[in-house]
Image 1 (cartoon, helix red, strand yellow):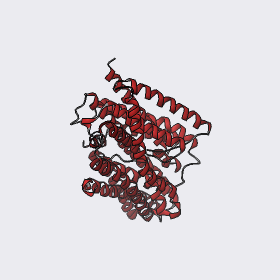
Image 2 (cartoon, chains in turn yellow, blue):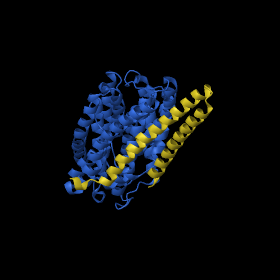
Image 3 (spheres, chains in turn green, cyan):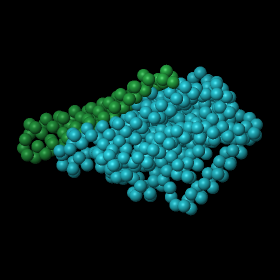
Image 4 (cartoon, one colour):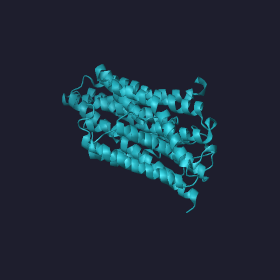
Length: 78
Length: 369
């Protein structure tokens, strides 16, 4: 029975689900962290730290967007 | 009208009706999380899900290829086998819906086709090992488990990242994120579930002789009609769900909703890319349970988890038995359109009776896939 299973395809599903599901949600968490901290620190006049958190949020947003586009492009490859 | 042409029209119409009911049943799974966390207004969520269900159906054809060529032998398929399989799936779904039993429309569809094929052509025409076990049953078990793990891990990671922030920006941020994750979930649902119907219609077209058995890729009109049927079903189903939703949906915070939707979408999209026709409801349920369990173990709805296991075991053989019976009854009327016409009328009458009897007992929300 083990021989009939396409383990390569199944393992691809496992690792891509883990990477996509956890990676993208974590990256979006960074968007919220970066945005919230950036606003908070900006109000306190700590411009340098605010910019760093702003960049972190931007990086997270870029990762989320890139992952979604990449996923759809791969999926559309018929 | 030519007898075979009339038969293929009935089979395609039955397949699209099945697709519509699939979308109708599944609206709750796709939009519930977004609505319960107030990420989206109900009407907007339903319209958005229906639109992305439609778009999702165009993304890939790998699941359709699996259904059309890896489950049963397309060289041996006949129109009556496809019809018997569809009737088996519809009858099983109606029965489980009426009695409130756990089910899976996807497994019912495959089970129905297998049962009809067994009676029509014997076991040699069914690909038990490579198709049923390798591409249907094992992925059907792996996907909800994987979604549970991904959903649980994702929420733990998210709490770690945003745990020290004030609640307001977190809630607002994740509600915004749910527009993205909910959209991806609807896209994923559309692509996996609509393709099963495309695969079945492709089998019917192979039997009719308008598609080659060696390459049963669904033509564009099949893709468009299957996409439209599931999207319409999702949209129509939504109005019923909205009325009953408030008291039935498990409450979760917006971060959990985001993690569950993201996990469900990731697993369904990855499985679709692998060509695995899985149960989207079981996968979404696994992700929701996982995101709840990671926060508090007592939040796990073990009854739902048990139902998934029961459905996994029972649906395929039960739908196969009904599919076999439906084929045998249809065949009593010969090989022309008379059998499908009589059985279709019987199914429509039976469905109407069940709906009227069920409606007298109050509204029911039954989310299966």
